[in-house]
Image (tube, rainbow, N blue to C red):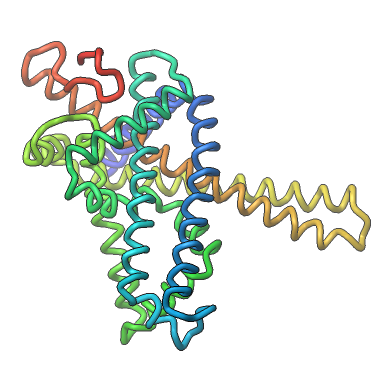
Length: 329
């Protein structure tokens, strides 16, 4: 047991070291891209959701939503169609972000720099190619990956959207016992954790579905529990770092208010700046969580590619680059 724990700790150190080396090379580009992307995408999705709800209310002949007409409005075919359209936009944005971050990681792996415009171009091109190659399944792939990739953004999204809070409350109340939706949520997240190992293979390789599953099984063979443990460790570490940063910024806001403001305005200052800190940390936590998760999955992909190279006895065995068509692996 002791040897196994020491081995697992060694694997975690190796992953952390490799992840930092990958991120360090193009860290500035990733930070700038995530800042711009998160601000834009959050505004886009929230405005689309508000516009869709207002349009649905107008078409149904009501001016506002109440607890009495909530189910009637939300389950109306028009509302469901609009929600599906918003999910299409949201999942495409998520796919765009995945490809953009992977482009930066791929450039770092090759010891090259990448600019933010090139990351955006890679994200758009990669997402478009992914959808074109899987027109009927890409939506479900993103839906299955969503609980894992957006694990650190879920709380902020729920907190900032009243409609989402009410919807989740209605769903939980529909079950005869609260433990049932809790267990279902845990199972959904667990499934998403396992399914997400296929993301880099689907994004970076152009091959049949059965070959993708075969590569994942070969990569995780005899070490599924260890890899899942390392994955969970990554997520816990990301959460703790975000929480520590939140405490530091929150303490700084309180200290600033006490030093600069008058006693009568301290409370209002803390409340105003506190909301700003919450919004900022939600943005940072979500971006940090997704980038960290994609980095870990990319390392899994790299290890699988190196194994495939050794098996085939070839120097280069990976598919044509999805963001630089002239490059050949």
